[in-house]
Length: 292
Image 1 (tube, rainbow, N blue to C red):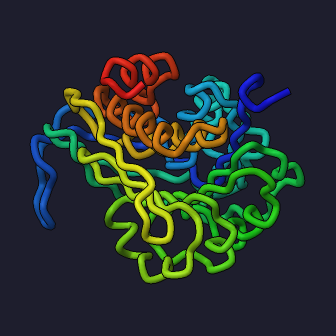
Image 2: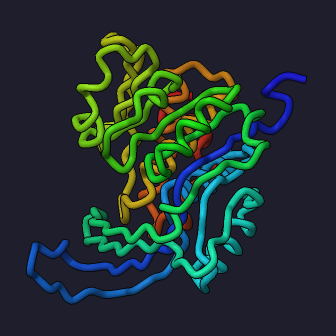
């Protein structure tokens, strides 16, 4: 049986939050109070979002994370199960709060985010069965020891989303096949990449993304024009789509194009997880935009 004749398996390691979102005309400056509009509450966290993205794109997504034994933790697990994500490796921490993200989204779809990590910081030992996946996607939301242990165990493709921006443990970096970072994250770690032999994907917002290896450009892609409402889930849609397609064996140029399409589609609806696109929508827009 080949990888394309069965559902691709993806393990995502990182954080789970509950997102508390307020829409505002403009993002507040320091010391400024801005009167907003609608308030929404939903499940987020980069790892949780990217697991849902992978699941909606046809993969079997497994999440390794930690939540608290509170109402937000119950909400998060129920929502992830509802999406079909395997949460059997999500630990529930007694007496600890689930992570929370406070998000402001302006009328242009731009956002600012503050996070209280809560139980995310307490993720420690990995379950034994975190080895045999087609791809493992790590995020810097998780503690270094967990990320390094994950990298040592991973037998398939190992992808690192360098978010949030911080230094990357050298052993983790040395074992990484593909690194994904936005421009700010890339600038923060560029000094670490001099000897990195894997593929570096830099996302450029509305300008698309570029793939490089040892300073050589492998591919560039730009997203199709869409009416953007909310950019909060775009990066997670991009990462989820890219990892699934690379794990399926798609060429880097094609995977990059499709990831840009997924990211663009995620901006056309409000919210993070609620806006993540499904495989048929990505393929349809990818083909209609002249790429497929």
